[in-house]
Length: 301
Image 1 (cartoon, rainbow, N blue to C red):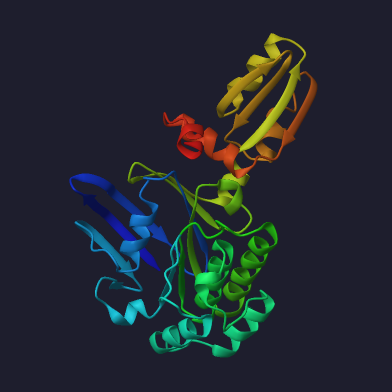
Image 2: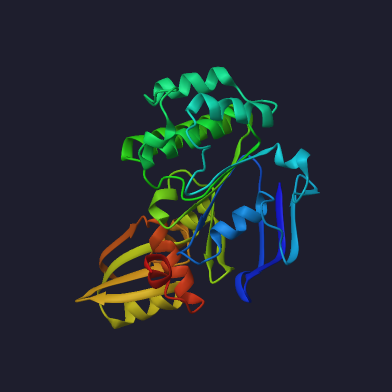
């Protein structure tokens, strides 16, 4: 369990993280989304104990993380730009991490290197960006830590490697209770693996919700009403987050589940009526617009 309370961190007087509080449950994937400068990397570095907060606390398994060797042995951090020793080979990095993490599995390391078709004795300096990211993921999974923190996890990976990485994380969650925290600029990238997603903006948490709850409670409707009276009756009953008209077609995003909606429309005279699934990005756009933010600008920069 990770508990982050009232966290602050500034650089040269500029707040990178401000009044940030989050809870992250075990054996789940927590996805953090935000543009550059939103505070994602700073937060991850404080969660790993690399940086010390100016104010607030980070408690992992009931203990503070900063300067706590016992807790740090439970965490493997994969940064956006992984660091490797000069002139090192993958086997050199394997030996290094095997000395740090008590549960490190050399057998799994060699197996995954073969699965990813990476040469264990080639100089890492000759690897592409994607190959370096693959190697860092292999090292992280081989460490068999309780927590895996990933900054821009899928950046530089081709679609096949992205799916393979997601499958490996899901398997470790199932087999040994791995808890993963990952950042991304892209909500679509996180949608099929995360249990909980939070949007960071200007150093704070804009929104944090379980994906399952979002998808159950927010729906998209397309309707053509028989008349204005039917339209008014439906709108009075629905919890409308967003509405736009496309000719006679009325398109709503509503905070209601499917059963409620079908009940509301039982006596509403419609020519056409359909409930459609929403993408995670569409849901967040609707939720954040309600609290006064244009999430398109936040996510897309």
